[in-house]
Length: 596
Image 1 (cartoon, rainbow, N blue to C red):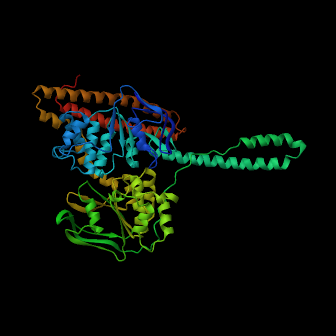
Image 2: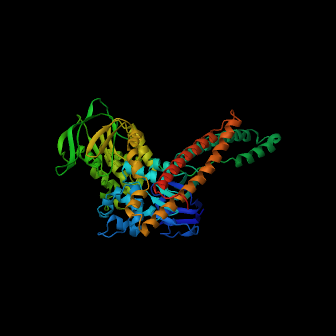
């Protein structure tokens, strides 16, 4: 097992120190989720590890033989490149390898032959995943790979990376995907990097527990300080108690409250108070959506009640944004109609609107120019402060803002418009994990109506009261919850995420020499994976047996920690068993005797 070691690493940008003498060792066989506030240095950390930039002092050491796989934010391509050619060149692999890895990510032959330049954001991310995994690296670096992926692709992406046997460092604002894929958590905060041996949810719970323990300890210290001060004040002047008083003074000097690193400011979303009345917020009659008279999806006849929070889900390119633009009156319906309830006032957060925030205008200039004249300066400052723009922060030029900061500026503008309806298109993109959590809580407390598009499963679970599916030319309310919707995708996902071994082999022609060589290569790979799975299952089975023996030996000696370990080990064994069955099925399908 190799490691990536940061040794006394210091790095700064201008007057700001992002990393201050950081030392941490990352095992290359672990899947590690990275969390931290926007601007804390998560992307910079990845750039340092891949040695794209050089630290001011200290160094990054990567074990010999460890092959890094890097998914860059920006791609280098020629206007004439087709998708398949770009993947081949980027990954330095054959067209056969491209086909093998493209199928699990839902890229079909027609898309591989299409123009790379013309790809949507979501499909482009799939192509980048293919180029990354086709290199078969030992350890991969991923910086916000789930931005702009639709929910079906995100689920497939999660399943594919779950089966990836190498290690990874994954930066993401999507807490659900971090918990699904990562067994360890790396927090970047206060110029330091902390590695925790557990998923993000466990780390967040540990942090909360740590704060509670420190708070309780400090309260005890304060009580003890008061007692000592009273004793010293009362008996210090008495000769008979002088030595005891001196002893108490020494004790008092040693009592120091425990301090934790100062937590960053937290988002405070404060929506204006409103009176919620019953009735229909939005009524649609035979609504068909599209562009330039060409239908994309519909017709839909449906009513959304006031106060509902509707998550709009479905594949990329199916019409989710078109639907939201239509009810926001940015697009005209192709057919049918929609009507908002009496007094409705819409606040619209468009998917790419923050890209228009450029130039030398400050945050304050922008907000004052885009809100109603009856909104006071104090209201603007309060709302901006709640979204982490306090004091001189509001004087930052728009041109220097990060994607997360721009998203918060747009949210401030929408809130200051005092809407009774919120229309939000991918509001969590570019926001850090903590800000997404606060946004979810704020929307849950909001008393108006919300229609939003998101692929963040945790965010949807928290906010949505119902779902609307836009897919295959239809718009329809979904009768169940998010778990039910994802389960409905399973049959198609099971087909799309299976390694595309058989279709490629059958197309090769087993009679020629190259075909036989490739069949043998696939067979060797499957045998290697099966052996690795069996080794892991043996280790886990032994651990499960030990844990089971613990409970059988002492039924009254219950241990919550061991119970959690047993549940985790059992789940891992079940997952490995499913992988073993899948691999052996593929091996048998090759119609080749399973011998090396």
